[in-house]
Amino acid sequence: RTFEKEKYHRDSGKPHQSDILSNKKNIYGKVGIPLQDNVKFEGGGIDYLKPFYLDNFSEKNKILNKVRALYYILQDKFVDTQLFTKAGDVIFFSAMLSHRTSYTDKNKILNLKDKYVIYYQLTNYNTIKNVLKITRKFNLNLKDLQKEIITLDVKGKKIKILSEDISNEVSSYMGH
Image 1 (cartoon, rainbow, N blue to C red):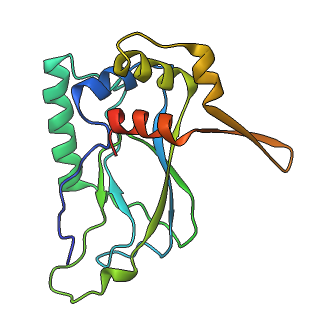
Image 2 (cartoon, rainbow, N blue to C red):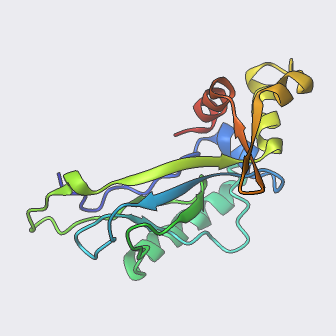
């Protein structure tokens, strides 16, 4: 299939998700590693819309929502939104970033079966706590949560990984 002008989306674009992510202490995003170059009109990566200046991503202000929408429409029409990446580059973007799969020229016959990206989700402890307070109806035991965080030592660096159950719970609430 070709990806001609696929719609922009946010991975966490629903109001309950933006309520959590508009908190400046919270982080939730993706780390992506494309396995091919992102070539103009052939795809292989993502296009993105640069966030509105000083945007806190909250959906509560209806006027700001309209201004943001107009800003994004104009940006899509007049700005090259393709993120130029090479195979193996590492990119990080917030789940609140409007993005899409890089579109392809519909007149070219392309073989997209080899267009792959490896994605990881990245978040912080504060976001995890905020989500679990909601999903567990404020019945959250922080000691139990600490047991669900696995710490790995990788060449002297400490890396924390959530257990699969907690990861699935947070991911399910926050979006794909």
